[in-house]
Image (cartoon, rainbow, N blue to C red; front, side, top):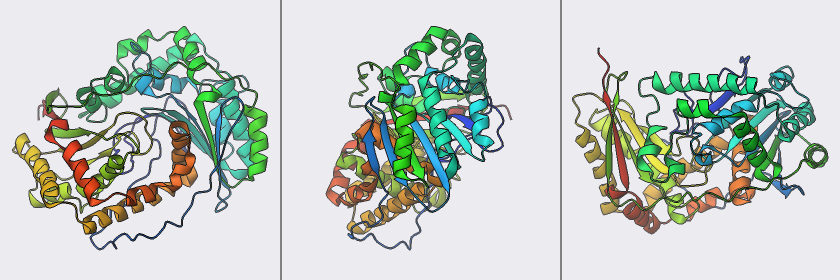
Length: 481
Protein backbone atom coordinates (compact mmCIF):
# COMPACT_ATOMS: atom_id res chain seq x y z
CA UNK A 1 0.00 0.00 0.00
CA UNK A 2 2.99 2.26 -0.43
CA UNK A 3 1.72 3.60 -3.74
CA UNK A 4 -1.64 4.69 -5.06
CA UNK A 5 -3.67 2.17 -7.02
CA UNK A 6 -5.74 2.43 -10.12
CA UNK A 7 -9.30 1.25 -10.29
CA UNK A 8 -12.47 1.34 -12.27
CA UNK A 9 -11.85 5.05 -12.90
CA UNK A 10 -12.67 6.31 -9.43
CA UNK A 11 -10.23 4.41 -7.21
CA UNK A 12 -6.98 6.31 -7.15
CA UNK A 13 -6.36 5.98 -3.45
CA UNK A 14 -4.40 3.56 -1.27
CA UNK A 15 -6.02 0.20 -0.70
CA UNK A 16 -5.47 -1.91 2.36
CA UNK A 17 -3.36 -4.23 0.26
CA UNK A 18 -0.52 -6.61 0.86
CA UNK A 19 1.73 -6.18 -2.15
CA UNK A 20 3.37 -9.41 -3.19
CA UNK A 21 3.62 -9.08 -6.94
CA UNK A 22 6.58 -9.28 -9.30
CA UNK A 23 9.75 -7.65 -7.99
CA UNK A 24 8.59 -7.71 -4.38
CA UNK A 25 10.62 -9.62 -1.91
CA UNK A 26 8.83 -9.41 1.40
CA UNK A 27 5.48 -8.98 3.11
CA UNK A 28 6.62 -5.69 4.55
CA UNK A 29 6.36 -4.10 1.13
CA UNK A 30 3.00 -3.04 -0.19
CA UNK A 31 1.60 -2.42 -3.59
CA UNK A 32 -1.83 -2.01 -5.05
CA UNK A 33 -4.34 -4.63 -5.96
CA UNK A 34 -4.86 -4.74 -9.70
CA UNK A 35 -8.28 -3.26 -10.36
CA UNK A 36 -9.67 -2.45 -13.76
CA UNK A 37 -9.33 0.96 -15.36
CA UNK A 38 -12.28 2.42 -17.20
CA UNK A 39 -11.86 3.19 -20.87
CA UNK A 40 -13.49 6.58 -21.38
CA UNK A 41 -16.07 6.66 -24.13
CA UNK A 42 -15.73 9.27 -26.85
CA UNK A 43 -18.49 11.46 -28.14
CA UNK A 44 -18.66 9.34 -31.28
CA UNK A 45 -19.67 6.19 -29.41
CA UNK A 46 -22.47 4.29 -31.08
CA UNK A 47 -25.80 4.24 -29.22
CA UNK A 48 -26.66 1.10 -27.30
CA UNK A 49 -28.90 -1.38 -29.03
CA UNK A 50 -31.44 -3.64 -27.38
CA UNK A 51 -29.70 -6.73 -28.72
CA UNK A 52 -29.29 -9.55 -26.24
CA UNK A 53 -25.68 -9.79 -24.97
CA UNK A 54 -23.84 -12.75 -26.46
CA UNK A 55 -20.66 -12.79 -24.35
CA UNK A 56 -20.90 -15.23 -21.45
CA UNK A 57 -18.42 -15.99 -18.70
CA UNK A 58 -18.39 -19.76 -18.00
CA UNK A 59 -19.67 -20.36 -14.47
CA UNK A 60 -19.63 -23.73 -12.70
CA UNK A 61 -20.85 -23.12 -9.14
CA UNK A 62 -21.22 -25.56 -6.26
CA UNK A 63 -20.72 -25.79 -2.50
CA UNK A 64 -18.69 -28.32 -0.52
CA UNK A 65 -20.23 -30.09 2.47
CA UNK A 66 -18.29 -27.77 4.83
CA UNK A 67 -19.87 -24.70 3.24
CA UNK A 68 -17.03 -23.56 0.98
CA UNK A 69 -18.44 -21.89 -2.13
CA UNK A 70 -16.56 -22.91 -5.27
CA UNK A 71 -16.66 -21.21 -8.66
CA UNK A 72 -14.86 -22.61 -11.70
CA UNK A 73 -14.52 -20.59 -14.90
CA UNK A 74 -12.38 -22.32 -17.57
CA UNK A 75 -10.61 -20.12 -20.12
CA UNK A 76 -8.19 -21.72 -22.55
CA UNK A 77 -6.86 -18.53 -24.13
CA UNK A 78 -3.52 -18.72 -22.28
CA UNK A 79 -1.78 -21.42 -20.19
CA UNK A 80 -2.25 -19.76 -16.81
CA UNK A 81 -4.53 -20.23 -13.83
CA UNK A 82 -5.80 -17.74 -11.25
CA UNK A 83 -6.73 -18.98 -7.79
CA UNK A 84 -8.63 -16.53 -5.58
CA UNK A 85 -9.88 -17.08 -2.04
CA UNK A 86 -12.29 -14.48 -0.67
CA UNK A 87 -13.29 -14.40 2.98
CA UNK A 88 -16.56 -12.71 3.92
CA UNK A 89 -14.91 -10.37 6.39
CA UNK A 90 -13.74 -6.84 5.67
CA UNK A 91 -12.92 -3.85 7.77
CA UNK A 92 -16.56 -2.79 7.94
CA UNK A 93 -17.33 -5.37 10.64
CA UNK A 94 -13.99 -5.63 12.38
CA UNK A 95 -14.17 -5.61 16.21
CA UNK A 96 -14.89 -2.29 17.91
CA UNK A 97 -11.82 -0.84 19.66
CA UNK A 98 -9.72 -2.80 17.16
CA UNK A 99 -9.81 -0.49 14.16
CA UNK A 100 -7.54 -1.66 11.37
CA UNK A 101 -7.74 -5.23 12.65
CA UNK A 102 -9.05 -6.79 9.42
CA UNK A 103 -6.12 -5.30 7.54
CA UNK A 104 -3.67 -6.33 10.23
CA UNK A 105 -4.96 -9.88 9.99
CA UNK A 106 -4.45 -9.87 6.23
CA UNK A 107 -0.74 -9.49 6.97
CA UNK A 108 -0.83 -12.39 9.40
CA UNK A 109 -1.96 -14.72 6.59
CA UNK A 110 1.53 -14.53 5.13
CA UNK A 111 3.40 -15.33 8.34
CA UNK A 112 3.37 -19.09 7.93
CA UNK A 113 1.04 -22.09 8.21
CA UNK A 114 1.36 -25.79 9.08
CA UNK A 115 3.47 -26.78 6.07
CA UNK A 116 4.74 -23.43 4.81
CA UNK A 117 6.96 -21.30 7.02
CA UNK A 118 7.27 -17.53 7.05
CA UNK A 119 7.80 -16.21 3.49
CA UNK A 120 7.56 -19.72 2.03
CA UNK A 121 4.08 -19.13 0.57
CA UNK A 122 5.41 -16.09 -1.29
CA UNK A 123 8.50 -17.94 -2.47
CA UNK A 124 6.43 -20.90 -3.62
CA UNK A 125 4.48 -18.67 -5.99
CA UNK A 126 7.32 -16.51 -7.21
CA UNK A 127 9.77 -19.35 -7.80
CA UNK A 128 7.16 -21.00 -9.99
CA UNK A 129 6.85 -17.90 -12.15
CA UNK A 130 3.69 -16.55 -10.56
CA UNK A 131 2.48 -13.41 -8.82
CA UNK A 132 0.29 -13.01 -5.76
CA UNK A 133 -1.43 -10.37 -3.70
CA UNK A 134 -3.98 -9.76 -1.01
CA UNK A 135 -6.20 -6.87 0.01
CA UNK A 136 -8.74 -5.79 2.59
CA UNK A 137 -11.94 -4.08 1.44
CA UNK A 138 -15.24 -3.00 2.98
CA UNK A 139 -16.84 -6.46 3.00
CA UNK A 140 -14.16 -9.01 2.17
CA UNK A 141 -10.50 -9.86 2.42
CA UNK A 142 -9.02 -11.59 -0.60
CA UNK A 143 -5.90 -13.50 -1.56
CA UNK A 144 -4.97 -14.60 -5.06
CA UNK A 145 -2.24 -16.18 -7.13
CA UNK A 146 -1.69 -16.17 -10.89
CA UNK A 147 0.53 -19.06 -11.93
CA UNK A 148 1.40 -21.27 -14.91
CA UNK A 149 -1.54 -23.62 -15.43
CA UNK A 150 0.39 -26.74 -14.43
CA UNK A 151 0.89 -25.29 -10.92
CA UNK A 152 -2.81 -25.08 -10.14
CA UNK A 153 -2.78 -28.07 -7.78
CA UNK A 154 0.14 -26.58 -5.85
CA UNK A 155 -1.74 -23.32 -5.29
CA UNK A 156 -4.90 -25.11 -4.17
CA UNK A 157 -2.86 -27.09 -1.66
CA UNK A 158 -1.13 -23.95 -0.38
CA UNK A 159 -4.36 -21.97 0.08
CA UNK A 160 -5.97 -24.89 1.89
CA UNK A 161 -2.93 -25.19 4.13
CA UNK A 162 -3.31 -21.68 5.49
CA UNK A 163 -7.10 -21.90 5.67
CA UNK A 164 -6.51 -24.93 7.89
CA UNK A 165 -4.32 -23.01 10.34
CA UNK A 166 -1.80 -20.21 10.76
CA UNK A 167 1.42 -19.86 12.68
CA UNK A 168 0.05 -17.25 15.07
CA UNK A 169 2.88 -16.14 17.39
CA UNK A 170 3.54 -13.01 19.41
CA UNK A 171 6.69 -12.37 17.38
CA UNK A 172 4.75 -12.41 14.10
CA UNK A 173 1.99 -10.23 15.54
CA UNK A 174 4.37 -7.63 16.93
CA UNK A 175 6.26 -7.50 13.64
CA UNK A 176 3.12 -6.95 11.56
CA UNK A 177 1.71 -4.39 13.99
CA UNK A 178 4.82 -2.36 13.26
CA UNK A 179 4.41 -2.81 9.51
CA UNK A 180 0.78 -1.66 9.50
CA UNK A 181 1.49 1.29 11.82
CA UNK A 182 4.24 2.38 9.46
CA UNK A 183 1.79 2.19 6.55
CA UNK A 184 -0.63 4.47 8.37
CA UNK A 185 2.14 6.97 8.99
CA UNK A 186 3.45 6.88 5.42
CA UNK A 187 0.15 6.82 3.53
CA UNK A 188 -2.06 8.97 5.77
CA UNK A 189 -0.38 10.90 8.57
CA UNK A 190 2.65 12.08 6.62
CA UNK A 191 1.09 12.55 3.18
CA UNK A 192 -0.59 15.66 1.79
CA UNK A 193 -4.26 14.80 1.33
CA UNK A 194 -3.51 11.56 3.19
CA UNK A 195 -6.74 9.61 3.50
CA UNK A 196 -8.65 12.14 1.41
CA UNK A 197 -11.33 11.27 0.57
CA UNK A 198 -11.24 7.45 0.50
CA UNK A 199 -10.62 7.13 4.27
CA UNK A 200 -12.10 10.41 5.46
CA UNK A 201 -15.44 10.65 3.71
CA UNK A 202 -17.08 7.46 5.08
CA UNK A 203 -16.33 8.74 8.59
CA UNK A 204 -18.03 12.07 7.90
CA UNK A 205 -20.95 10.93 5.74
CA UNK A 206 -22.06 7.82 7.65
CA UNK A 207 -23.62 7.51 11.11
CA UNK A 208 -23.38 3.77 11.82
CA UNK A 209 -20.03 2.90 13.45
CA UNK A 210 -19.54 -0.08 11.17
CA UNK A 211 -19.55 2.20 8.14
CA UNK A 212 -18.00 5.25 9.78
CA UNK A 213 -14.90 4.20 11.71
CA UNK A 214 -11.24 4.59 10.76
CA UNK A 215 -10.76 1.27 9.00
CA UNK A 216 -7.05 1.86 8.35
CA UNK A 217 -6.59 1.77 12.11
CA UNK A 218 -5.91 4.15 14.95
CA UNK A 219 -2.38 3.59 16.21
CA UNK A 220 -3.56 2.86 19.77
CA UNK A 221 -6.02 0.24 18.49
CA UNK A 222 -3.34 -1.44 16.40
CA UNK A 223 -1.09 -1.58 19.47
CA UNK A 224 -3.93 -3.01 21.56
CA UNK A 225 -4.43 -6.11 19.38
CA UNK A 226 -3.55 -9.27 21.30
CA UNK A 227 -2.61 -12.80 20.34
CA UNK A 228 -5.98 -13.99 21.55
CA UNK A 229 -7.69 -11.40 19.32
CA UNK A 230 -5.87 -12.82 16.30
CA UNK A 231 -6.63 -16.44 17.17
CA UNK A 232 -10.29 -15.69 17.76
CA UNK A 233 -10.58 -13.69 14.53
CA UNK A 234 -9.06 -16.53 12.50
CA UNK A 235 -11.27 -19.16 14.11
CA UNK A 236 -14.39 -17.06 13.61
CA UNK A 237 -14.02 -15.71 10.09
CA UNK A 238 -11.38 -17.71 8.22
CA UNK A 239 -13.49 -20.83 7.84
CA UNK A 240 -14.63 -22.55 4.65
CA UNK A 241 -18.28 -21.69 5.28
CA UNK A 242 -17.33 -18.00 5.28
CA UNK A 243 -15.32 -18.14 2.06
CA UNK A 244 -15.46 -18.49 -1.69
CA UNK A 245 -12.80 -20.21 -3.82
CA UNK A 246 -12.58 -19.21 -7.49
CA UNK A 247 -10.44 -20.78 -10.20
CA UNK A 248 -10.18 -19.04 -13.56
CA UNK A 249 -8.01 -20.10 -16.49
CA UNK A 250 -6.63 -23.09 -18.32
CA UNK A 251 -7.68 -26.19 -16.37
CA UNK A 252 -9.91 -29.24 -16.59
CA UNK A 253 -12.95 -28.73 -14.35
CA UNK A 254 -13.26 -32.35 -13.21
CA UNK A 255 -9.60 -32.50 -12.23
CA UNK A 256 -9.92 -29.19 -10.39
CA UNK A 257 -12.96 -30.48 -8.50
CA UNK A 258 -11.00 -33.54 -7.40
CA UNK A 259 -8.15 -31.42 -6.05
CA UNK A 260 -10.51 -28.97 -4.33
CA UNK A 261 -12.33 -31.78 -2.54
CA UNK A 262 -9.01 -33.39 -1.61
CA UNK A 263 -7.45 -30.27 -0.08
CA UNK A 264 -10.44 -28.26 1.17
CA UNK A 265 -13.13 -30.89 1.72
CA UNK A 266 -12.08 -31.94 5.23
CA UNK A 267 -11.54 -28.47 6.68
CA UNK A 268 -14.02 -27.84 9.52
CA UNK A 269 -16.70 -25.19 9.25
CA UNK A 270 -17.22 -22.59 11.98
CA UNK A 271 -20.17 -21.14 13.85
CA UNK A 272 -20.53 -17.70 12.34
CA UNK A 273 -21.66 -14.73 14.45
CA UNK A 274 -24.94 -12.94 13.70
CA UNK A 275 -24.68 -10.42 10.89
CA UNK A 276 -24.05 -6.86 12.00
CA UNK A 277 -26.69 -4.22 11.36
CA UNK A 278 -25.09 -1.99 8.72
CA UNK A 279 -28.10 0.17 7.92
CA UNK A 280 -27.75 3.92 7.61
CA UNK A 281 -30.55 6.39 8.41
CA UNK A 282 -31.93 8.43 5.52
CA UNK A 283 -29.95 11.67 5.40
CA UNK A 284 -32.30 14.65 5.66
CA UNK A 285 -29.85 17.56 5.76
CA UNK A 286 -26.69 18.44 3.88
CA UNK A 287 -23.51 18.02 5.92
CA UNK A 288 -20.38 20.17 5.47
CA UNK A 289 -17.00 19.66 7.10
CA UNK A 290 -13.54 21.19 6.88
CA UNK A 291 -10.30 19.33 7.56
CA UNK A 292 -6.98 21.15 8.10
CA UNK A 293 -4.03 19.57 6.30
CA UNK A 294 -0.59 20.75 7.38
CA UNK A 295 1.06 19.22 4.28
CA UNK A 296 -1.39 20.31 1.56
CA UNK A 297 -0.68 23.47 -0.45
CA UNK A 298 -4.00 23.68 -2.34
CA UNK A 299 -7.58 23.27 -1.18
CA UNK A 300 -9.48 20.14 -2.14
CA UNK A 301 -13.16 19.27 -2.09
CA UNK A 302 -15.03 15.99 -2.01
CA UNK A 303 -18.75 15.39 -2.24
CA UNK A 304 -20.65 12.21 -1.42
CA UNK A 305 -24.23 11.01 -1.84
CA UNK A 306 -25.64 7.90 -0.20
CA UNK A 307 -26.25 5.15 -2.75
CA UNK A 308 -29.51 3.27 -3.42
CA UNK A 309 -29.81 -0.28 -2.15
CA UNK A 310 -27.54 -2.66 -4.00
CA UNK A 311 -29.18 -4.51 -6.96
CA UNK A 312 -32.24 -2.26 -6.99
CA UNK A 313 -33.29 -0.49 -10.24
CA UNK A 314 -32.05 2.78 -8.75
CA UNK A 315 -28.67 1.18 -8.02
CA UNK A 316 -28.17 0.44 -11.71
CA UNK A 317 -29.45 3.92 -12.55
CA UNK A 318 -26.80 5.44 -10.26
CA UNK A 319 -24.17 3.47 -12.15
CA UNK A 320 -25.33 5.14 -15.34
CA UNK A 321 -25.56 8.57 -13.71
CA UNK A 322 -21.97 8.08 -12.62
CA UNK A 323 -21.04 7.58 -16.27
CA UNK A 324 -22.95 10.70 -17.32
CA UNK A 325 -21.70 13.00 -14.58
CA UNK A 326 -18.23 11.81 -13.63
CA UNK A 327 -16.58 9.22 -15.87
CA UNK A 328 -14.44 10.28 -18.81
CA UNK A 329 -13.59 13.60 -20.40
CA UNK A 330 -17.07 13.77 -21.92
CA UNK A 331 -18.71 13.71 -18.48
CA UNK A 332 -20.81 16.68 -17.39
CA UNK A 333 -18.69 17.57 -14.35
CA UNK A 334 -15.39 17.31 -16.23
CA UNK A 335 -16.73 19.57 -18.95
CA UNK A 336 -18.16 22.08 -16.45
CA UNK A 337 -15.32 22.21 -13.92
CA UNK A 338 -12.27 21.59 -16.11
CA UNK A 339 -13.07 22.58 -19.68
CA UNK A 340 -15.55 25.42 -19.22
CA UNK A 341 -14.45 27.12 -15.98
CA UNK A 342 -10.88 25.89 -15.43
CA UNK A 343 -11.41 25.43 -11.70
CA UNK A 344 -9.26 22.28 -11.66
CA UNK A 345 -7.23 20.01 -13.91
CA UNK A 346 -9.19 16.86 -13.15
CA UNK A 347 -12.25 15.52 -11.40
CA UNK A 348 -12.20 11.98 -10.01
CA UNK A 349 -14.74 9.76 -8.39
CA UNK A 350 -17.22 6.94 -8.65
CA UNK A 351 -19.04 4.30 -6.64
CA UNK A 352 -16.93 2.49 -4.03
CA UNK A 353 -13.46 4.07 -3.95
CA UNK A 354 -12.01 0.79 -2.67
CA UNK A 355 -13.13 -1.36 -5.56
CA UNK A 356 -15.98 -0.91 -8.01
CA UNK A 357 -19.76 -0.64 -7.91
CA UNK A 358 -20.22 -4.41 -7.80
CA UNK A 359 -17.85 -5.73 -5.12
CA UNK A 360 -19.32 -4.47 -1.86
CA UNK A 361 -22.26 -5.52 0.31
CA UNK A 362 -23.57 -2.70 2.46
CA UNK A 363 -24.25 1.03 2.45
CA UNK A 364 -22.11 2.87 -0.08
CA UNK A 365 -21.35 6.38 -1.29
CA UNK A 366 -21.14 7.90 -4.74
CA UNK A 367 -18.27 10.35 -4.44
CA UNK A 368 -16.28 12.85 -6.43
CA UNK A 369 -13.23 14.93 -5.55
CA UNK A 370 -10.90 17.57 -6.94
CA UNK A 371 -7.98 19.78 -5.95
CA UNK A 372 -8.45 23.41 -6.97
CA UNK A 373 -6.80 26.83 -6.89
CA UNK A 374 -7.02 29.00 -3.78
CA UNK A 375 -8.75 31.77 -5.69
CA UNK A 376 -11.72 29.50 -6.45
CA UNK A 377 -14.57 29.74 -3.95
CA UNK A 378 -15.75 26.46 -2.47
CA UNK A 379 -19.38 27.45 -2.97
CA UNK A 380 -18.79 28.01 -6.68
CA UNK A 381 -17.74 24.36 -7.06
CA UNK A 382 -20.81 23.13 -5.18
CA UNK A 383 -22.94 25.43 -7.31
CA UNK A 384 -21.61 23.81 -10.49
CA UNK A 385 -22.42 20.38 -9.07
CA UNK A 386 -25.98 21.50 -8.27
CA UNK A 387 -26.35 23.12 -11.68
CA UNK A 388 -25.36 19.97 -13.59
CA UNK A 389 -27.66 17.78 -11.52
CA UNK A 390 -30.52 20.24 -11.92
CA UNK A 391 -30.07 20.23 -15.69
CA UNK A 392 -30.59 16.48 -15.70
CA UNK A 393 -33.56 16.79 -13.41
CA UNK A 394 -35.25 19.62 -15.28
CA UNK A 395 -34.48 18.49 -18.83
CA UNK A 396 -34.88 14.78 -18.18
CA UNK A 397 -32.66 11.95 -19.39
CA UNK A 398 -33.34 11.32 -23.04
CA UNK A 399 -33.05 7.84 -24.48
CA UNK A 400 -30.06 9.04 -26.49
CA UNK A 401 -28.20 10.15 -23.34
CA UNK A 402 -29.17 6.91 -21.61
CA UNK A 403 -27.95 4.83 -24.54
CA UNK A 404 -24.57 6.56 -24.51
CA UNK A 405 -24.24 5.94 -20.77
CA UNK A 406 -24.96 2.24 -21.37
CA UNK A 407 -22.27 2.14 -24.06
CA UNK A 408 -19.76 3.63 -21.62
CA UNK A 409 -20.81 1.26 -18.85
CA UNK A 410 -20.64 -1.75 -21.17
CA UNK A 411 -17.15 -0.74 -22.31
CA UNK A 412 -16.07 -0.30 -18.70
CA UNK A 413 -17.53 -3.64 -17.63
CA UNK A 414 -15.96 -5.74 -20.37
CA UNK A 415 -12.67 -3.91 -20.08
CA UNK A 416 -12.72 -4.82 -16.40
CA UNK A 417 -13.43 -8.49 -17.09
CA UNK A 418 -10.37 -8.70 -19.36
CA UNK A 419 -7.93 -7.28 -16.82
CA UNK A 420 -5.06 -9.01 -15.03
CA UNK A 421 -5.10 -12.53 -16.51
CA UNK A 422 -8.44 -13.50 -15.06
CA UNK A 423 -8.17 -11.86 -11.65
CA UNK A 424 -10.77 -9.16 -12.34
CA UNK A 425 -13.16 -11.84 -13.54
CA UNK A 426 -12.43 -13.88 -10.42
CA UNK A 427 -13.11 -10.81 -8.28
CA UNK A 428 -16.69 -10.47 -9.50
CA UNK A 429 -17.33 -14.21 -9.42
CA UNK A 430 -16.13 -14.42 -5.81
CA UNK A 431 -18.06 -11.42 -4.53
CA UNK A 432 -21.26 -12.46 -6.29
CA UNK A 433 -20.89 -15.91 -4.74
CA UNK A 434 -20.29 -14.45 -1.27
CA UNK A 435 -22.91 -11.72 -1.33
CA UNK A 436 -25.61 -13.08 -3.64
CA UNK A 437 -25.00 -16.84 -3.72
CA UNK A 438 -25.10 -16.33 -7.48
CA UNK A 439 -21.81 -15.88 -9.35
CA UNK A 440 -23.85 -16.18 -12.55
CA UNK A 441 -24.82 -12.55 -11.93
CA UNK A 442 -21.67 -11.69 -13.85
CA UNK A 443 -23.60 -12.53 -17.03
CA UNK A 444 -26.68 -10.54 -16.04
CA UNK A 445 -25.13 -7.13 -15.41
CA UNK A 446 -25.44 -5.73 -18.91
CA UNK A 447 -29.09 -6.68 -19.17
CA UNK A 448 -29.79 -5.07 -15.78
CA UNK A 449 -28.39 -1.76 -16.99
CA UNK A 450 -30.45 -2.04 -20.16
CA UNK A 451 -33.62 -2.33 -18.08
CA UNK A 452 -33.12 1.19 -16.73
CA UNK A 453 -35.54 3.67 -18.26
CA UNK A 454 -35.51 7.48 -18.36
CA UNK A 455 -38.25 7.35 -15.72
CA UNK A 456 -36.07 5.30 -13.35
CA UNK A 457 -33.20 7.72 -13.96
CA UNK A 458 -35.43 10.66 -13.07
CA UNK A 459 -36.68 8.96 -9.92
CA UNK A 460 -33.10 8.22 -8.88
CA UNK A 461 -31.96 11.81 -9.39
CA UNK A 462 -34.90 13.08 -7.36
CA UNK A 463 -34.23 10.85 -4.35
CA UNK A 464 -30.49 10.24 -4.29
CA UNK A 465 -28.92 13.35 -5.86
CA UNK A 466 -30.86 15.79 -3.70
CA UNK A 467 -28.66 18.29 -1.77
CA UNK A 468 -29.99 16.98 1.54
CA UNK A 469 -28.46 13.57 0.75
CA UNK A 470 -25.02 15.12 0.31
CA UNK A 471 -21.89 15.49 2.44
CA UNK A 472 -19.21 17.98 1.44
CA UNK A 473 -15.67 17.77 2.83
CA UNK A 474 -13.13 20.54 2.19
CA UNK A 475 -9.40 20.27 2.82
CA UNK A 476 -7.99 23.51 4.20
CA UNK A 477 -4.30 23.69 3.12
CA UNK A 478 -1.84 24.62 5.87
CA UNK A 479 1.52 23.97 4.18
CA UNK A 480 3.92 26.90 4.26
CA UNK A 481 5.15 27.56 0.74
